[in-house]
Image 1 (cartoon, helix red, strand yellow):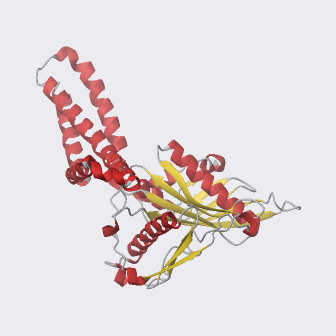
Image 2 (tube, helix red, strand yellow):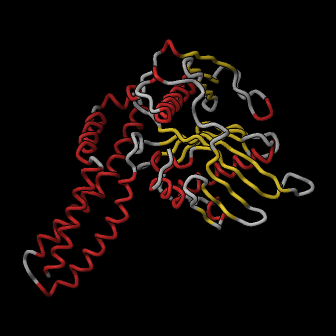
Image 3 (cartoon, one colour):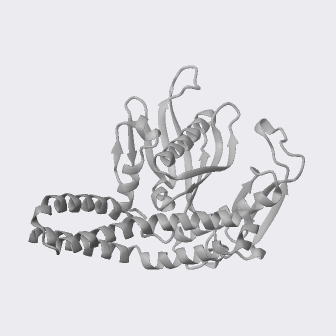
Amino acid sequence: MQPLKKRVAELANSIAEAMVRLDVASKKRQLAELDQQLAVPEVWNNPTRAQELSKQAANVRNVIEPWETLQAQAADIIELMELGDDSLQGEFEAQIGALEEEFAARRKELLFDGQYDDHDAIVRISAGAGGTDAQDWAQMLERMYLRWAEKSQIEARNVERSTGEEAGIKTSVLEMSGPYAYGKLRSEHGVHRLVRLSPFNADNLRQTSFALVEVLPKIDAPDEVEIDDGDLKIDVYRAGGHGGQSVNTTDSAVRITHLPTNTVVAIQNERSQLQNKETALKILRSKLAQLQLEQHASSLKDLKAGESANWGSQIRNYVLHPYTLVKDTRTKYEDKDAGKVLDGKLDGFMQSYLEAPVE
């Protein structure tokens, strides 16, 4: 029984150390504050804000509770083993083995040590040059991330989408909500390159297409990234539909420019100008937070214009012809089953990036 006692004691210590590294204590304080805000009846006068707070509370709770359960289960086993009933040795061994497996799976969370890794994410997909092929490729990537979200218990919502003339999309903005959404998805930030036989070419020639994926931490609290109103230029205009037709008779679309960095966000998805402005400001805060991370800047005042994800930062190749292979250019991780990758099998790429991040 002694080796088992030693094993579970070491496991309990490892769990405690992991909880310190994950700063579970401060997350519990954060959850208490969120629950306190949600307990005030007036908060529900603003349903959008109340829903955001509820989502934040659920995300924090989903991080805390599995670790507290692990810790409690290890403590229970230690207590029962102190009673010294040798007839239960086999049962203890099975329970400890199951706990060790659960801990091994959970300890991957220790890789999420970036400033915004515990935040939700905003994923913006833009088709590159190449017309219909590139727009179709952008839509394939959109589907890939939606399938990944579905398999990963991450909630996905489309907040902006511009369709192509013939097929595919020009741009798509997805909001991803769930534990460590940004931490998991930041591996996807950059240019994705596709090589295939073009379905849009009469001669069925081999075609190379590019799409840019921007992954931004979703900033809910304005005080996390404070923007000076004097640094903003806000334009309103009439929303346009597919093929240039008007879909709105009022100036509901909003374009916001952060003048010091020349960062532009345009939104026309919602029916009201106010909703579009709120969404655009959220995405702008997220873009500036990402820019701050990339430039290692201590404040927005230190940011330089034009230094963000660009078309030179190619991160992954997807080859569908003459063979199938998806390969990450940074980590060299690869998967020969391109079909499964495009159906959302991304965890291997994400894990290898977190274990050997290239900044």
